[in-house]
Picture (spheres, rainbow, N blue to C red):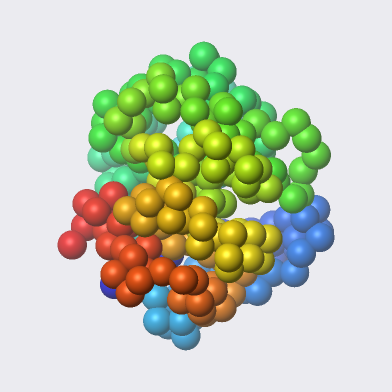
Length: 263
C-alpha cells in the first residue's frame, strides 16, 4: 500500500481562485488544478492507494466549514485531517465533533494561522487532541510563500514534544523546511514523525538519505504536498534513495498505516 500523507485540494468552486493565489505568493507552478478529482486522477496515474488531505482554516469562522468538507470528501482513497483555528471560540466542542465524524487528526499551519507552536495558549488544544487519540501535523520550517518570522522551527517543536511526551506529532517537510542542520541536531532520532513532502529537490538524494537514516525509517512518512509537486516524480525520488527495500516499504505506506491505525 502506498499512502501519500500530505496532499491538498479544495472545493471545485474555490480551487480556480485559491490555487493561482497560493502559487503566485510562492512563485511556483502547481502540477494539478487543486480539485479533488484532479488529485484522484493523479493517484491513479502514480499508483497511490490512499491520500491524506491536509486542510487549513485560515480564519476562526472557517473552522466548522472546513471540517464539514473534510468529512464529506473522505472515502474512495481519501482520508482527511481536520483543522482548528487557534482563535475559534468553540474549539473543544469542535474537536469532539470532528472525532465523531471519523477524522483521524488535525493540521496546523502556524504561519497562515499566526501563532507560535510553543505558545502556552495552544497547549490546552494539543492536550485535548491527544486525549482524543488524534494526530497533529504541523507545517514545519520556512514557508516559501511567506516572510519570517516562521512559527514552527525545530527548537519550538522540541519544546512541544517535551511538553507532550507520547503525543503523535508529524513535522512536515522533513522536520522543518530549510532548517536541515537544526533538524539533525534537535529532532533526528526523537519520537516525532517527519513527512517527505516538498523536501527532495532542496535536500538532494544524499542529504535526504542521511537525514532519514539519522532519524530512523520507522518515523518517516511519504508525502508529496500535491498539487505543488508531481506524485509520480516524488515516488521516483524516494525510490532513488540509498535505502533498503524494507525501509522504502515502511516509508511508502507501512508507517502511515500504523500511525493511522488502518490495515
